[in-house]
Image (tube, rainbow, N blue to C red):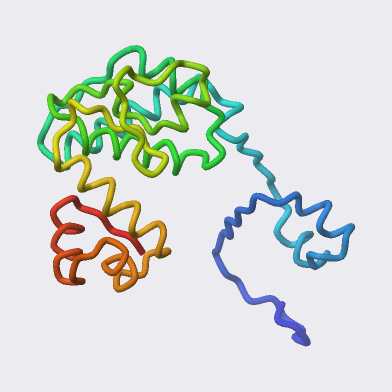
Length: 194
């Protein structure tokens, strides 16, 4: 029934809404409209954060690996130690952080096998597992000296984009290269930073 209307109008629609806030609490705090809450609150499903779903980490990692393998036409494998490390990490960025971690590892592996050295230093440190011997710390990222120059270049491009909050002009200035060169490197490493 339209607001101010008298007769119902048939419609067939489903609304799915998602939030990371406790809406019931927000209604009580008067930071969310109660009438909207009661319209939306037909069936509430709570999806726990990834840190509470440790058993899902391996399955999600395999899912992301399969997707990257398919898109690149390369079959990647995962060292079993990597699963152990990933399952010990707390994942404050949830599934997006896991997907980005897997994509990073896929992009820097040289022999199509993802090893612990392909994981960021903060994930290795967060597990209490020591970093790889001979590790070079590059802007809070762990890079093994066995990795090639392209890996270092990839990490520098990402670092510049992160520091400039995605502003390509500022990132190019930080890196001491032209915008055109930075765009070419972003294309080369399949970096989409929006």
